[in-house]
Image (cartoon, one colour):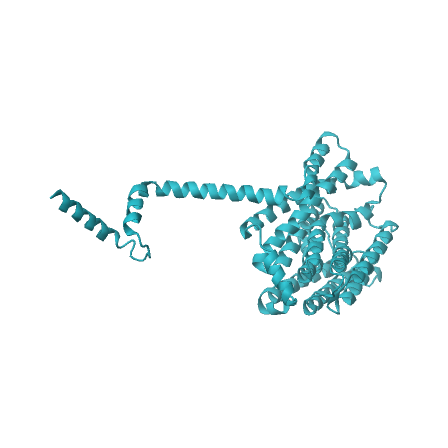
Length: 435
């Protein structure tokens, strides 16, 4: 009887467990059943412990890869040091200098996180995200300056960002990519470059007409028509940029597909390049790094006047040349990195895409925000600055029309930027005293 009872119990157990395990292909059902009977009460505890351990390992690994692995991160402590000096000593020259050093590694890590995210989103969205996160600093600085009535600083820094992206960032990217890939001609999507060039020319049109209206003294209502035209043009430019995003991301996505490289090159890329962090980790790091860059940029702006007095450098030169170089450090690092890896479509999405976003979105957005704040922010960037922007857009449009890149094109763009920098160094801003 005890033996038959044991057999019957075993049969009942097997029949009861057939339903959960009916879809399994397990061969040793008795051994699996014994394991389940022994460990079933602790499965939730084990699952929670495993999840917690896995999340902890992923977090530590992600921190190591992003913050500790790269040697350039040795400059990270200069950021907190700049903030400390701001409150302890008040020496704006040193605060300005150490803020520059502290932003450099953050910019490089922004480019790295964007590159990791581009593995999951593709080059078009990846370039757009990089331009957006890179320009977040400029937007925060501009709104901060607008609240303090520093309209001229807003105009000069945003203009300098466009010039820096189109000449310095793109030039360094073309030059670095051309040196690394010396024996081949680098190619990119010419159709996408032409569309961006057209948008930049439209931005020049929107910025030029208020300046021409002002300097020809042909306003219907002096001092009011220029501001009204700027606000109307800004709304039109925002609509155009929204339409461009729909065109780029939805209706004509195939137009922005990267140029197919050689088969061997693709195989090498597939074998060598795999993402090191997940897409959610990349998004999280992009957000954290952007916030930290924005915080440091705020202290950088506060130290501009003191740095100008300490280093005997004009404020206009700092606003147009030095400040945009720091603000565009993320685009600068990532554009060069992508060009050296022969990913010119992402490079153009970063450099030219960032210029397009500033000219067609950030500048009109600041005009609208100033309108809401009651500040008379307009599109009259003065005659000298407007002419500089117009010539720059023409030069870059001619460089992009062939759809190819080499180190000589990059060198020419860099030399053009040096001419622009020298011009602003000897230029006296007529509106600097007023703002």
